[in-house]
Length: 116
Image 1 (cartoon, rainbow, N blue to C red):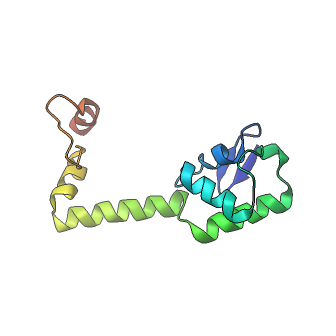
Image 2 (tube, rainbow, N blue to C red; image 1 turned 60 degrees about the horizontal axis):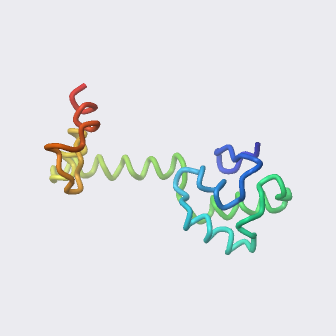
């Protein structure tokens, strides 16, 4: 197992799918990273050299917010919405959907979580 930016990447998976294990990197961003570094998206993680791993780690850490940094930004934004007192902040605080989804018949999971 390789550890890149605090995430454990499986050895037998191609690099594009393995990068999606890092919090904050989806499939399109993983493709962008592979293109920027000149890596083939189909290369397996176990075939990467130490230089490529180091290059990958530096590129991700310097260009994207990931893991703990991204989590801090999201929680700070949610706290700001709560202190302002806007509708989205109140919905976040109550644990209910805040983007217009219906709650009468759906969103049962979020309603159960918010009651506890």
